[in-house]
Image 1 (cartoon, rainbow, N blue to C red):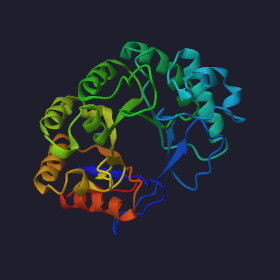
Image 2: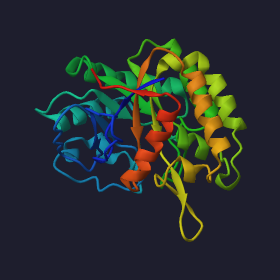
Image 3: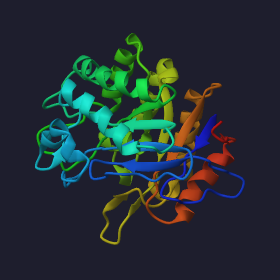
Image 4: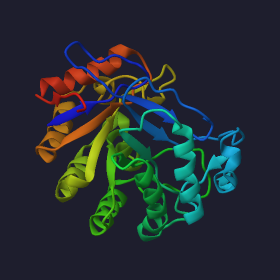
Length: 295
């Protein structure tokens, strides 16, 4: 299994693992970016309220008005998709072209079929590829938001499979970036008593679609002092409550499915200490997962 490591929040990888590409935030509250080298642009993901009022977003009335209680409503319509593409182009400005643009799914209270989504999305892709012909476009499965009214249309295992089935039928420049911890959340797997059956079945079911998966997100969860599980903190040891058998079964299941010659991107979305990020990478290295520079 071969991965290209992306630097997340400037955190360093362990010795011997070198990253030459950064993740850069491109949310709707940004009006400029300042990448120093190759980068992946992580666009608006609709987790929380945004102050949709800055010099850039004010130029795009459809983006600005597509919200509920200030949580952005992604992929509202075709005009939204066109404005989103132009927002990104203007946000990037005279900087280097991105290696990756990472986008996120709509909610199902206004966009409830993948056919509707793809019909809207294609307007975005046309504009983006005209400006950045070599960019890779990834969409992330999502779970967890302050939005009230609908759920993300790409979230649990069943919806991810349905999305990949539909994507396979389309001639698009789009791939999935698979966030495994969010699949655990979307499948309502109890962190205090993890059962991997749903994840193993999910992995077996995505086997035929792995050419449409361009990368992974991985991060830990950790119990706070109040007993609440906190996302994007800790490592795989805290995620699996120090159960090495569970951790081993999970990692081996992923490796078995993605044991091909495709090199995929990898983002360790760890918001706690650098030691947690390095712990996750060291775990993966034990299973002979190879990390390579982005060419």
